[in-house]
Image (cartoon, rainbow, N blue to C red):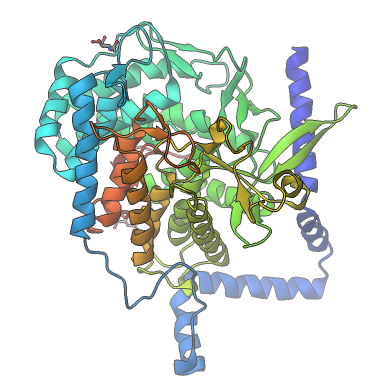
Length: 592
Ligand SMILES: *[C@@H]1O[C@H](CO)[C@@H](O)[C@H](O)[C@H]1NC(C)=O
Ligand SMILES: *[C@@H]1O[C@H](CO)[C@@H](O)[C@H](O)[C@H]1NC(C)=O
């Protein structure tokens, strides 16, 4: 009890110091309270005019064209490309090269490890997550990619395995979030794309087992689930805690399961998490990466868009899109959060002015007071954000129902333009982190700040903008230096290409694909992680992560496919790249 009280007080302190680090906001609040009567009348008039223009944006477009005539030039959106040069049709050669890569990965796995959870392409072996037996981690994650790529033979064999071999009756602990996004998500997409009832049957079985994790005092789901015993299990490494991204990245999957089964239970449990988060968020819209599952509160911990934070932000937008933009609560939460990110986390690098996201790390002084230290560290995971911001700009901040491709700045709100620009810049930054010996980006980069001591450490060889922390010549590389076949940059390139039609995004995607082919491809089959992206020849780590086949190669395929394949107006992708259809909710949903 004493412990809980302490946490509560700390949380309040945390929110105060986070807010006071942004003086601009304090100033705005002060001036709003001293509005005089004259200014009030002006304000009311402005609000009416703004409201009118918001509802009838065409009026201002027509008027501005009349006033300004042909000399009227829209303010350009960076990264939107030349509107006369867009081409959304397939690049067949590159698309088919990605299919070939997928087959190189899948056929090796099938040959050496069919049905095992994970694959080790150098030793030609599979392994399971637990001793209790596999749960189809790789197979379930890969099926929808086969369906999308039209690989019918491979699909038939994988489906046969699901129908006859897949079992969730495993007496062991599995990560709730990973099992949901990879296995449940994969089965749901496979069901949508194939209409084969076996996938739904398996998805319902798995969903019911995972449902038990939500039985906590707050309703926040526990980190692990014993699938065989059907019981949630707390994470012994973080007693009392669950991570924000993990509890807030089950919603697309559980909501879709309700749509398919007509059983509200999945929807209600997942939605409750969002209500808890909305009530618990610290002003102004910031969320730390850990919550206490007894009380449903945030606890002092890092605030970041990388690990344990990332897909919480992603799913705010995607929940709004999944239900066809009908649940405004998610639009509001997303807008607040993007404001907070711009206010506190978006920074610019010292020399080349690369836009990046920093992290806020809580620190306690000798009196136990909490303060926040800004750390210029960006996970490769954050690279999802560029494309997500661009997609969010043309959906949540659009002044018209359908924004054209490429969008025009006058069809977006000022926040939409802000988000768009940040998104395009973040993609540029993520591409800059690929400027390594291999052309692959490391797991974590640090951006240069004047006080980082890097200059004196590396005397004259210090990089201008970013570096891999702890990397020393001729020493074993730190984990930060790895590339483990992650998809986030190509995911952003896919989204950016779809909303712009700008061929530059395809060129960047092709560069990354070629680097993967050159440095990760194993001759005998499969792809392996690289231990240090800045070292040639590369050293491999004997592991092919399942997201290579579910995400990296799927997003690359879709980047080069015709844009009518899984259009963004009709689909949302879960955080493991499994596409779900957009729908109008059949039940009364949302909360406020
Ligand atoms: C993984 O689990 C499955 C199902 O129990 C089993 O058939 C297979 O042999 C296991 N693989 C390994 C490498 O232990
Ligand atoms: C989404 O809503 C629009 C109307 O705003 C409607 O035209 C469209 O058919 C809906 N999409 C789906 C998939 O229900």
